Length: 170
Image 1 (cartoon, rainbow, N blue to C red):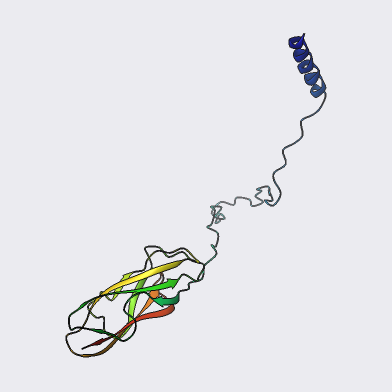
Image 2 (cartoon, helix red, strand yellow):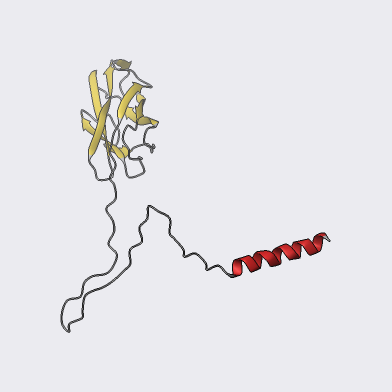
């Protein structure tokens, strides 16, 4: 009896739907659908409009780097001539751009202290903290040395706070 009831229900459902017209498809709101029409006429020898899709302008992001703290070698650290130095800073990516392999940190003032003048900037997502690290070598001559560095975006434009190392060679 149950089996027959199921078939009867299906037959009633199909009969009820048979008299209705299918509703037309309506696209979701927020994305207007405009018909593509062309009102130009072709004249021999006349320039035709370029109908190839053009790239849309992308929103640009803002660059930012905030110095938070020295993680190693505080300012004024006494070092020996020729000593290897592992300088680290904690910074925040305060912009809306994510730093990738196209970003760098470059020397902007003072001696390079044996480090390459342009180095990769640690990749970091917008709003996150990162650790910057540069390996230096103390000069042979006694004195106070300060080397300042700044982040550069993929276009080579500097941004954000400078970070620096300041040492005293004994």
